[in-house]
Each structure stands twice: as structure tokens, then as C-alpha cells.
Image (tube, rainbow, N blue to C red; front, side, top):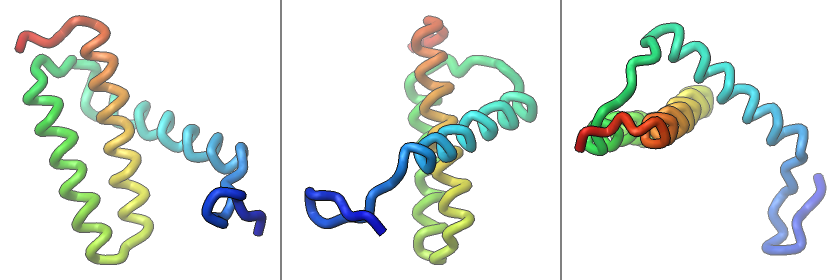
Length: 94
């Protein structure tokens, strides 16, 4: 396994990064199909949703469940992307 020059950490390939991004894009499509395209309308709503996903990630880490960790990380990423889309679309009331 190749190692980085900074800190001797394993190298993640561009293909592995692309695969992770593809999984997030797929998850985003699945969530939009499941929950619809209704915008989030407040900063507090965004914080609540992303915070809940983070708590679920913490639980998965404590259970040492790598598959669940991956699923929760995808949920956080999707939540962040959708949040940015809502902000950019000007949907926040407060």
C-alpha cells in the first residue's frame, strides 16, 4: 500500500474518491425520491437534521459497525449538499 509523505498515511486513489462521490450522488437521488424536493426553510431545521445524522454516526461508531458508519456518513453528506442547495435557492425564512 502506498503511503503519503506527510505522516506516512495510506494513499486514497482518485478512483476510490470517485467511488465515494458516486455513492453520495446515488444516496442523494434515493433520498430525494423518498422524501421529495421540499426545501428546508430555516437554519435551525438544517442544524437539526444534520445534528441528528451526526448523532446516528456517533452511535454507529460506538457499535463499531463500519457499514452503518458509511450509511450515516452518506446521510450527513446528502444533508450538507441539500442544505447548501436550499441556502443557494434562498429558501430560508430565518
